[in-house]
Image (tube, rainbow, N blue to C red):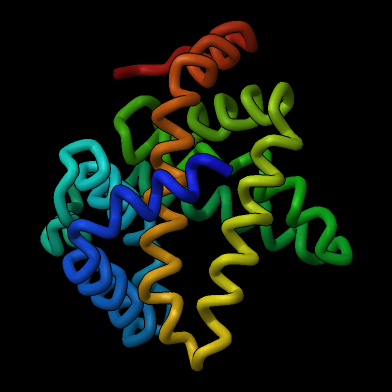
Length: 189
């Protein structure tokens, strides 16, 4: 996909900054035994700011708790849905992961609160399911390839796929808003 190539072109000029950002996030998640995953939306928020500005992500963005309640609610909804999906022979996780793909981004971008972000994401996924699924599968394969070298390749592939996802979101934002509105979901921002 073009978004993956564009993700590399976005990350490459500031690769060291992106690597440090990704490693710090990974360490926080690891040392908190996964509780740091609630910072996942902050990770996206900081990465989006970097993509939009053309710079490197700011480490401080990981620890911005201004919207922590909506961030946690979103991560819990997405996590529970994906866990239930995984329990259904893994196939359900493909559906829930695709359907809720935009929810963290919408919250990170200040476009919606948790429940409305999930509804808007589902509305967009209903019309673009295969496109989102293909993107997710390509990003997963790229990250698995990065993980082969004892995980070291992931310090490059993870920032590239995150940047690619943000670029994909940026190019889909108006359609997400339009389809959410058509489904009766009101977005903010």
